[in-house]
Length: 316
Image 1 (tube, rainbow, N blue to C red):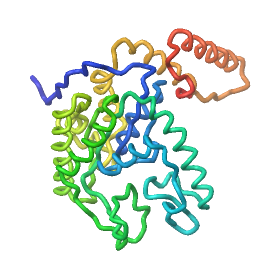
Image 2 (tube, one colour):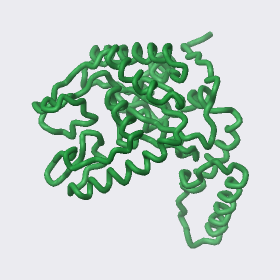
Image 3 (cartoon, one colour):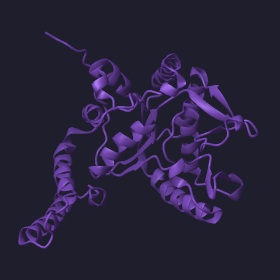
Image 4 (cartoon, rainbow, N blue to C red):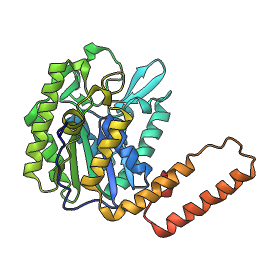
């Protein structure tokens, strides 16, 4: 007897391998899956501007990464008592001075710009069709930074505008492969009905884009959690975020979908080494621990020789 619906998803014809430049952008789900990928030694960037949710913010961030245009003081806003940021970044970038912020975001942009030029795969996790537009400028912001609500207009972006902005991105980067997914994260603050409308709009937009462009592909993370796992036990206590177990399950599905099987031995070796590097000793002065440290050094050198494209610096 079959007690659940399993999502059937054919693997990509062209799959990613170690050495490919990868960029994960979008919702918290991009952070989760991208973090696992990076932690296994892949050449991956994860949300270089912080977590993003709507298609317009993702598109704007990609354009900024490509251009490498430095941020200016005109783009800085005061976000709290003694803190500064920009509408392009999330709260992780808050700084106590404008000068510190400018140096931080532009140094980071320069690094990520160079990486972006070498990127082969862009994995985009869209979270919501709802966005906030600053009333004075008319621009969609990536993050409101808890500023007064009367400074923004809450807007529903809709399917066709999302199709248009994502199509612009795909036309701009025909040399890159895109994998789109709709985040299974629930935006309960929008309301349950509004959340469903939002997800439906994103699903329709991504479907149209993937049918139009040969370098656009769809991975069904949303359907895996809602239709295959289909149980509240796969959500954390907030009933919004997937549990670690659910994320890991979807990651394994992503591996089957997107990663070349020839890389599985390297991934296994990387995971074993990662666990060793994260081990914290109970008795660091013991002879057993000194031997363990020597074994770690040996394992690192071994994986560098056997799998030279694995970035061991990402494993620790």
